[in-house]
Amino acid sequence: MATIEEVEMGRYAQELEDDVRHLVRKYCRIMAWDIPDLDEKAARGLILAALRASVTRVESE
Image (tube, rainbow, N blue to C red):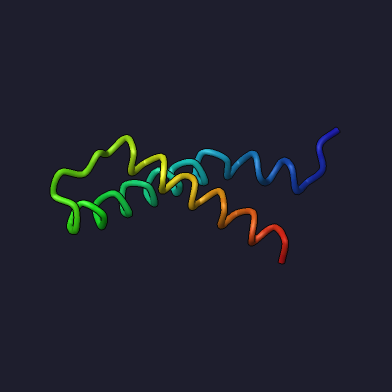
């Protein structure tokens, strides 16, 4: 049986995914200001890697 915390997180899973998508779009826009011919696929990969690294650092706190 799932714990109350797991049930609650299940409710927020879609919201978390939406937040990550928003962050990726936000930082792609910011990068595009400085890089006119931005390779969006490459930028998304770099942004997602940075987000993963941030999650790892937060987990270790």
